[in-house]
Length: 358
Image (cartoon, rainbow, N blue to C red; front, side, top):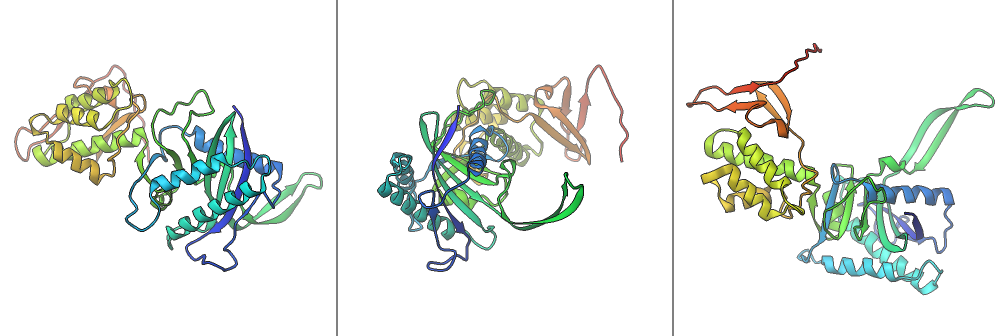
């Protein structure tokens, strides 16, 4: 599969950009030529978003109908992105290119409105591209290194020289924020992305809410992060009710229920798992409140990409085990028989190694 870029529009974005000042501009490939090597780097950015697996900093966005803040609802955002897909910019149509720039400017203004002092200054790139014959829109927010100084070696003269680079964009592996619309299968056949949604986000930094809000999306975390959050939430409910963590049987009940789904696990699957884990203490509203407080109201978990490990901390002694090994035999946990009693953790195996550290 090959990505071809048809058009690019870009502009500075920062919370202090105001209408009419020197940084209030949008230019595009209608008037600016971009070196083919630079285009290749942008193909790399887009490929990174598309190929990123369902883990880590990947989220899936669904367009929201909420316009309570006076801005556009998600449906209007989707209309703009669909319009970009329809524009005939590849053939250099002047009027379509101008419309592409207008839409890009409106998106730029909206992103600036969602930025504050915590958000880093950068550049917004709107890209119309095709993956084989399938058109898509890529939106990238790139931070620049305003000034970077480093020594370089001239291999011909064998001299060490000084080089200063200004306004450099990151290498593809350091892309911090990007999204693609619509979502489609990764370009790498070894990767699988089964989650459903409108927009796929890749955000490597921690300050991410404003980018999703700018896109008017309600997002759900990646499968592994969601399953981890839900397991921790159910364990927290169990501690509040019984004063103990989930035991091996309860952990396996949750794991096998989520992994046993034929398709993507949803909220109903989580409630089924919660009912099995919590037993008579299961309360539907309490589980819903947990999901809401954890920001996981849009549950979708790929059963092949769930939490792999559980870590126990017993009086400062940490035990890390595969989820499948917490089965009541290899790892067993006896709860305190009375208030103030002790946990007893039993670990069984055929081979024991020892390593002294620190």
